[in-house]
Image 1: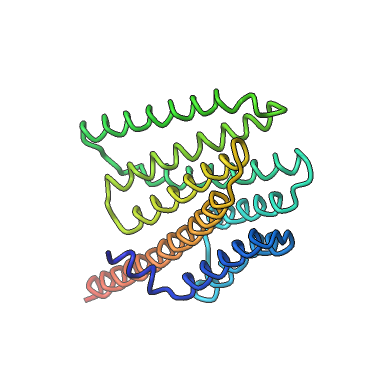
Image 2: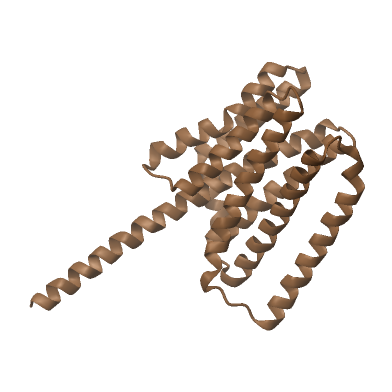
Length: 252
């Protein structure tokens, strides 16, 4: 409850999310291609503006994640041929792989009990089976192998992200683990709705939900990065204070 209260109390993020989503809805309802392009492209620059007005630093890996996602948005907006579509998928896949690297780095000190390990293993196998079934159902919809493998790679990456984020949450149950789990869940459900619109049947409500979930995922990720760096600053200050106190004690 404390986590959701803090998210709702951040009025700037809530206002940005509602404004961008309203622009997307308006663009779809009016079939305004230019407005739709603007609304998609400005999401990450606006979030960066909000972030760097409060923070002075962002780790390179997180900066690259947002950059890859931004490039994916750009290639999606200016999609003219199969090459730009593949470049967009590569950019999104790159951002997911970088997030996987962040999660894997969190697992160095994680220990699971036997029952939890079996539970997580069953969840992973079930998700992998669903991905395999989906792969078999849509592979005939692609005109070339590259697009097929990019879709499959992105799907596997998001399955791994959800699995690892859920495992990390079970092991720690911290605010940061909840934020990361919500982030990857938004990415996952947004991708599912996007693929439904692209590969099965187009429904504008699904498109709106996919856009909203993608934007929400970026906002939650920005919140995760902000908390991560604030914690790093606090830990650095505490370590300096302890070292200073130890030096004074040794001098005495």
